[in-house]
Length: 318
Image 1 (cartoon, one colour):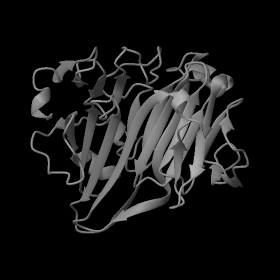
Image 2 (image 1 turned 90 degrees about the vertical axis):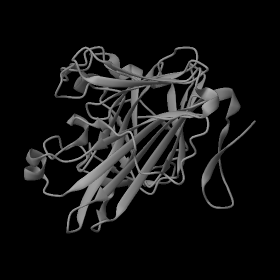
Image 3 (image 1 turned 30 degrees about the vertical axis):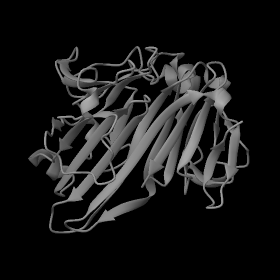
Image 4 (image 1 turned 120 degrees about the vertical axis):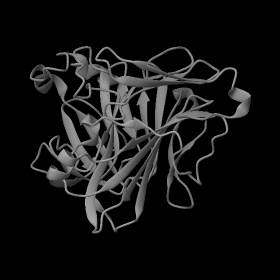
């Protein structure tokens, strides 16, 4: 189910238990005390705690725990269509633990505990989205507490298919008004609150004062969410995911949502690594990989983004 370096054997742990709805969940731990919890319903990461036990992901206190639907919060996987529940969405399907998953050549197991999950379509799924696939998800927790999700989607049918994808990630923040996001300046985005009209980001950093629902295109492989009050910075590093989705429902929409507290919008920000604007097409027998790594560091270790010689964005130390 999962592996870790031999030097970890006496301290790192992987535990399978059941949640309140009776669904199996996997808990990964590292020697320093950080942990990650993954539900087999949807392959959803429902908790990510640092070595001080602080929760880094938001989960609604009004989350409706059912055996057939993922709770609001954590990290959910959207496939094969972003935001379309009825079309075989992976976030509401039952995954299985795969003990002997095909190797990931680029994945270094040293200093990591991880679990491999597998999703295949059922006969009912094929009625809605008639394409054979194997979806492998690896969730790993590193010795430094960073969290990685690697998705591999293989076309096992006889014809090409296209899909969109996202890791819908709810970050826990002190207060949305104390947060800014860096790394998306000058990028084009579609605003879902303005009939998906195309705009260009004008600000050096994005702050939040009202509802936001945007998809940024051709985004850099590293962006950052800075929480001033907690003096905490989330780094989001990604591969194979050109888009970034930003979402916060704000007050009016929150009041209309049955699985979100009226004021809980202030404690969360969704930042999704995604592939939406240009759907991915897979030929028969081919495999696509999309990866996101989430790292938390004290904000005092970061100042701002500066262009590197390669044209990418990176953090410059003080």
